Length: 251
Ligand SMILES: [Zn+2]
Image (cartoon, rainbow, N blue to C red):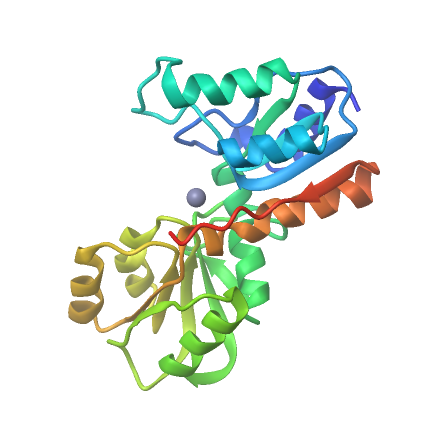
């Protein structure tokens, strides 16, 4: 598939133009014209670029690309090494940040909800189909400790639980990645528990003072599933050769 056509396809699929973001979404670095083999992953780190080179991929498709608002814009050091590796191997870099969080089926939030056997009932901001984060329900009331254990088992990593809410949980606020500051929004939507990737010192106090359970399950661990699901979708819909590569990250 032509590299620009693939960008147009992905932009449409992920409603990329409708979502305000902290980085440009779509084709961030241009490589060869024809794309057949794609590596998907969470972050366009050097390790993932090297996997793409080994695999002779025509494109890398990630959730965390480059050109973040406020970062040093100079192409020096680590950034130069990454750009050089991509450009010298003619590898296209496609990055979708918030569009890949919020997609109703392929997005990180939808995929995490599915993995945890939750039913999404609304956006974290009520009625917004492109809301960053969601409100979901468990199939049956469950204790916060049992729910935290389920998350640990499913993500294969020990999660952090601050148990500060009711005895049983049913209504869950969720947002993958570094969304700890949406805890107040989750509380305002009557969530019993809020789950995200990262935690800050202040988040624990918020949980205690609001009376809401809080789970931090890892930024990487909660955002592994969108890029993977998108890749599987591209195999089915476009017949492309797509492989997901997980570069483990404890954060
Ligand atoms: Zn993220």
